[in-house]
Length: 115
Length: 115
Image (cartoon, rainbow over all chains, first blue to last red):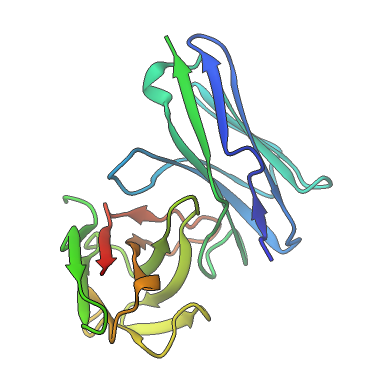
C-alpha cells in the first residue's frame, strides 16, 4: 500500500509560469514532509520541507503548502525556469517532526520547463 | 566536506555473484540510510543506522542482504547470490538527528546491473 502518492507522472510548463506539483498521503502519523529534486545520474537533493504544525513554508521561488485535513501537500515554483526541469519527489516521515525514522517517498513527478 | 560518497558508481555482475557497496556519510552525521530505487519508482527504504546500531530494517531487505556500519562511520551493503531483480540504484543517505527535522542528504548512488 503506497502511503505517499504523486499521481501525476509528468508536468510540462512554460518558462516564467507557475509549476504546481501535488502529493497525497494516507498515514495520519506523518508529521514532517519534504520535497526532493533529482537530476539524471545524481542522487536526490533536498529542496524544501514543512512540519505539520505549519500550513505553508516558503524559500525563494519555492513554496510548499500543507492541508492536513485533506492529507495533501503541494509544491509551487514561481517563476519556473528551465533549470528546474527534473524529477521531484515528495517524502514524509513520522515521529516528532520526522526525527524518529526513515522517509517514505512517492514515485515522483517529472517536471519539464520549456523556454 | 564533500558530501555523501558511494563506491562503486556502477557494478555489473552475473547472477549468483556477491556484490558489496560502500558509503561514506557526511562526517558529523550520526544517521545513515540505505535506499533502493528502480525505474519509475521513488527511493524505497531498506535500512538505517544510528551510529553503529542498525535501528530499522525494511521487509525489502531479504536475508541475502546485509548492511553494516562497524565503527559508526562508513557503511557497507552486501548482496549475496544476486538475482536479476536486484538490479537497481542503491542510494545511501545520511542525516544529523535533530528534533523537529530529519533532512537526508543523498549520495549519487551505486547502480547495480545483474546479468
